[in-house]
Image 1 (cartoon, rainbow over the protein chains, first blue to last red):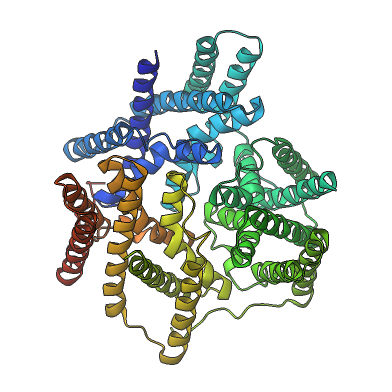
Image 2: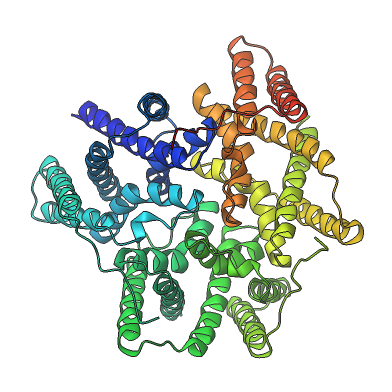
Length: 204
Length: 204
Length: 204
């Protein structure tokens, strides 16, 4: 099963790398810019999580994460050069998958490390969301995550489900599956029905 | 006394969380954006300090810091929705208090870790100032700290006082008190008399 | 030789500090802003590298790096105030030197730590390039590194040379020298002949 998880993890990294590549495309960056943006989006959140928990940073001993990023960025560039358009609908769904897997990975790593459930939820959400936030900051966009769409909130919801399952003492895989499907279902629903968080707006 | 210090620390975190929430208000962010900006402002500097000194990050084992942030952000939002204005004068004074306490916490942690006095002053100032800097970078503002007001400089001054007290061998609490009051007094004076650093301006 | 390397390292830090000071000059920052930008440019990349590899951050126990930054920033400011112009050509060459040395330092530290060659090249490039990237993000510029000039790519080339030398089992100094001269030569050539990476531009 650990092997299976690793492939899923690589898939999540690749999806987020594609989203970073698309941003670099939008901002007229060069080849190195593509690689940096793809990497930051894909492994920024997990790197921050590992540094905060003082764990070995996950990609340093496993270069295949970086190979996955390079491959995803390369295929995206070739695709864009040939077709001049991009299947955004498919990317949205893939991104929801990546979000759900990153969330569960962060939750699991934090709980294994011995944090309490509240911090674990924070870590799961950070893993899933901070890469995209750093990408937007580098590109001088106000981060998308902070602007109304039901995105990070789905991670918090999935994290609560995960933690609840842990507390009622189900198996670890059961808890992971619940967190994963919870995040994924809520995110897909938010995409489909355009759910939004109320934007914080006063009378100013 | 350790208990007393913890409450002061929570107070500093809450004050900086309010300042992050106000920025999110100004930038029309959603509920998650409020939480992220409040957290980054309140614990960004201390997190960076702990990662650089390779100490356990202070809020990972003590979730009450995050509870304090959530509470402060929530009260600020409710306050803004009801009154549609904010007591900026009071916030400025509270921010000066937070600045002074964060500075002393950073100094103390660095000296306990075994750094020299110069690095300790750097760490104190970084603890106090970097959260706000990251907040401004995320919101696409040129960081306020870098733009002329006598803000970070008060931390350097307070840090020098603290280190001097350590060198002349007073008690630890005496050194902390000197650093705290030095930072606070200079900052309050800078607010009251509008003291500024000369902005770096050539003939360009 | 270790002593000699340390001086070279200080030189690289000073050169990058000058480039940070120039950016602060362009952006009308105050004295503290100058110090922050100079420091972030000079030690940002190395700090991130050490945090990711979980090594002690290099400047914490060696404050002379920070002294070098302060001195370089001070001399630059005085120079700008007196002459109102700056020898950009000389700075470009010095920056190429700094780039080459930082690259080799990052490579060496990563390989000593036990990473594979691919991660070592990533670490070398990150050490050389990330400080400038953070500087640009703080100043709300789209990072220069990501915008077409042959800059980071020279680090990747130099890193490949270094790794190749290690694989064919030359001495450590020989490998370092190859990586250094490779990076430097390619960067100087890129400056002289205005070599550029193709900017990633579709039909959008």
